[in-house]
Amino acid sequence: MDIVLSLGGSILPREATGLRRTAAVLASLARRHRLRVVVGGGQLARDFIGVARGLGATEALCDELGILATRMNARLLLSALPGAHPGVPETYAQAARARENPVVMGGVSPGHTTDAVAAILADYVDADLLVNATNVDAIYTQDPRIHPRARRIRRMSHRQLVELTSRAASSAGGHTPFDLLASKVLQRARIPLVVVDGRNPENIRRALTRNPPGTVVGGSERRPSSRGVVGRGL
Image: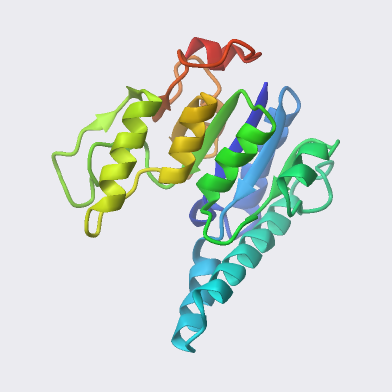
């Protein structure tokens, strides 16, 4: 299968042992599948952006710092992935043309989250599946940290995801379970999504099984050209 992984910067290990463990899972997936990884900025991006805003920097500069942070994290992950594409692509075309496997990249466009970049890349390369490895175990009806009665969602359609993310994005202080732009891109392209708790890297591997952990979005809506066993079976 052709897989795009959105790897949240907040779950990227900051020490060698954890980083090797994550890289080992990615390397094992790359032996069987075409894998492209988009890494987020995490705390590194938040730290730099916070200082820049304190100095009165424009949001454009803050976006630029955020993108640079994602690319630094991508470089760090690459150091644990021998045999991967050696550079960090800065455009979707570069990521699509890279011959080595896996490919690791960071941000591309100002204002776009890691999820949005991953979704656009998945559409660009006609991927079979997008896996979102984040710091929560699934998508919930509401932010479970605030609403104890929030319901964990096991399966949902792309339309339901867009509706949920639209409501969350428009509410004051709302917690968005997945980026709204990314949700719309996946709905348009009919690319399945699996959201898993990436703090345990084994969940990334399990996301490709027929009974993945977390939340499954779409699958039955997949376009007929899909080559993916998982994509068709979700």
